Length: 144
Image 1: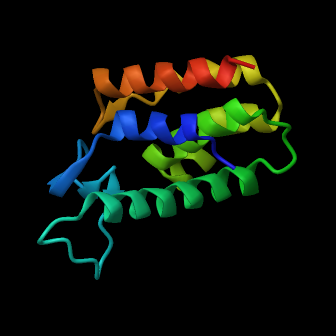
Image 2 (image 1 turned 180 degrees about the vertical axis):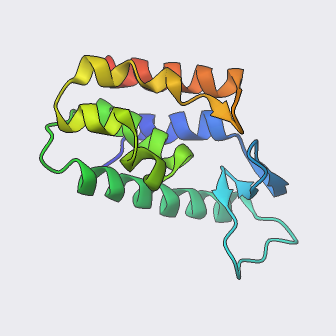
């Protein structure tokens, strides 16, 4: 289960918005980076407690994906937190098709850690905020 430190890392980098906005990739988003799905209506925004619930639901989904995809790979709590933050941000499909994932399956943790900074692009343009997030995730991943 993701630690409070892992949740706080996601909150730090996602930021908090009461009203819908377009994220760096142009997707409709609210709260702590919750991607607004078809049928969800947030025209009046969200309360802090609603945003917290959306965050926790989304974190659980990201964490389930990490556990499912890497069930045979021994991960520390810090590694799981870092990967959950990454998956929360880039999505399950992008993670599953990444070299980072392939290296984890091979248990090459050092090389996998080196892949985090590669995930700093939005629409093929480097993003300093994403690079800094990836460096935080990489540090957390390598901590233990």
